[in-house]
Image (cartoon, rainbow, N blue to C red; front, side, top):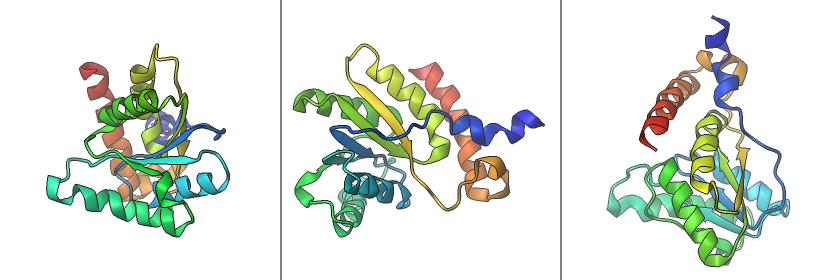
Length: 178
């Protein structure tokens, strides 16, 4: 029973305190908490450039709109539009890491802060660690602050409950696939 109750803490392990970097990534699957955290980090001087990524299997004709509403949130929070980069091909966490690594290599960037929801951190740490291994580039995971998340009571909220259980399944899938 304690193992089950501790799943919220387990899936959210891997988050770090932000440090200065060259790039911030707002991963897809965002309800606004991720992009708001990225805006706060930009305002705090943690990185000058933002990459918005993650299409989560959305149809090709709606992909640009998904990226644009998130950019509008950033711009309204004071992020200059010229500091926002879009990645419009990744459909999952692994592809987001691969696309980010390629962009970093192309632009000569060495450090990135990756922002997502707390229960996504365990899987992201595995994915990004796998993709970035041996690259000489570094990433740091930073959790957003969604109002629905409580690591100690994750089962009491349908959204967080589904997120935690899905993350456990996805982590197993990713370990087997990649």
